[in-house]
Image 1 (cartoon, rainbow, N blue to C red):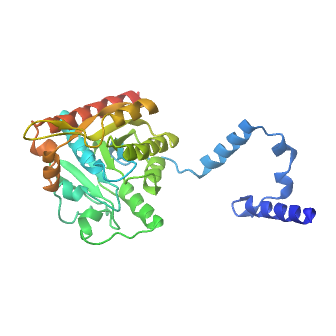
Image 2 (image 1 turned 90 degrees about the vertical axis):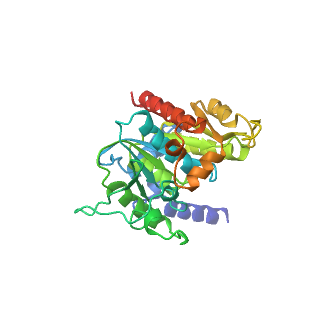
Image 3 (image 1 turned 45 degrees about the vertical axis):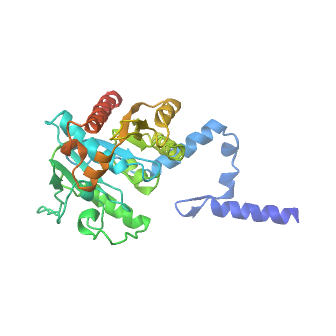
Length: 322
């Protein structure tokens, strides 16, 4: 009976261990070369096999540095941060050209936040020309490379992974950006296919992780930071969004989502803390109107917070690209 089950285990092992669709002979599985391999050599072999399947990174035509803005979970203000970060980069140095790519397939927010409407035009080579407002060219993910612009706001987006990857590849390679110094990418929340695909296909200068101080948001933010480390994307740092609420009447400050959580997480992970963005009524109202606060209220403390964030991101890019 024991011999029978041992035989079945060997048969199962021979089916599992395959290479490019061909069965690996059992003699290879139990060869002395494999038996004598230590743990380190086995890990080297695993890394070698995994590296074979990774795509080669190819720069986006005309784009200098790619900065991704990510979060472990939704609802932490990632898209608002990405938009105001991009505009903040332009405000710091108007000579620099900045673009914004909305890769958040299930919740594209850039068209609303940037007050962009209409259909993008195509060049003679069928490359999409980004729509522009406030001097910032933008595109958003969709079947025709512009979901937020070309799909009705009420229409649900029900796509499988292969459809997402196909549209993302077109979005990365078939957009006429012209010449950009920085491309800010608003990533979907979480650590899924889009994050991995962009990280493995495009040279990314660094990732900005957005989180609120709330414990549940910090748990997911930590997963996001660890994912970027695994795919060898530098983590530029953490942003603590909705850090404090100041009453417009009495000026009393309340830490609605907790205090200092993102700063503490940055210390734990050994990454930089990029700054605090307050929970402010002006940010919400201007975002809903499609007038980002960096543009609509440039002299406000909240706009200054985004410009400080942009300056911290620029400094970190210089540090990691030296």
